[in-house]
Image (cartoon, rainbow, N blue to C red):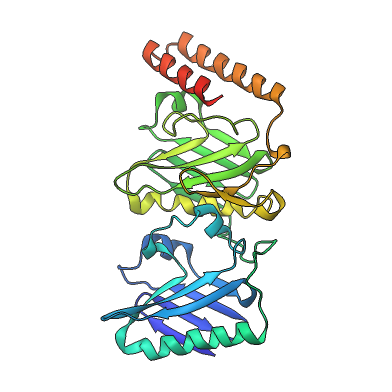
Length: 299
């Protein structure tokens, strides 16, 4: 048994599993406290290291690619302080941290754990149901359906369409970008029908525009992870690649994209919906023109 207890959290290794528990101190980010304890099986670990610094050091765990739905859903974009696989270590506990890291490395060597990508998720992600209130609305996931209830401050187009309910079976992937405090973030639920849509997040009824509290908006990663854990593993969808915004995402396959005829039907349906909202007075002439142009550009 190897254990280190710090204000930032606790790591306990019993030879087969590393249990990571976040600390309760106010310096520990809300995301890590909400995500809670994580049990990391040895076979999910690619490596671990202690990084000493002058005043304190850091224990860092590196997981095998494809092992964790959290890392896949967030694409490496979690702020460093919110990373659950990192532990801040006081300088006087550096020796203990080195010991814990060495015990994990020794077990990885003895058990001959490969470093290659996994073909299944080895961690379960957060439990469901899970619900998060963000700046753009409240998003909930019960394991079967995603539901978005728009806030009073959401765009009129979104509020006019009412709550958005998406079956997990209709989803292709979840795209997530955190609110940095300098630039807005978003969480977009991509379905077969919306694969080609490029509406801006503030107008997209399948996306949450994250522009408020960075601390609270970060919690949307809980929903993104819970949904991702229940989608087909990326290894079954043609592998992984980075898009232009450096978001880790599955490389699209032919089966994941709608046929050309369906693509045309989706475009016509979107335009009809916008026309109805315009006729009913929900959208102004300017809003209708801008949203229509965005839809046409996306398709």
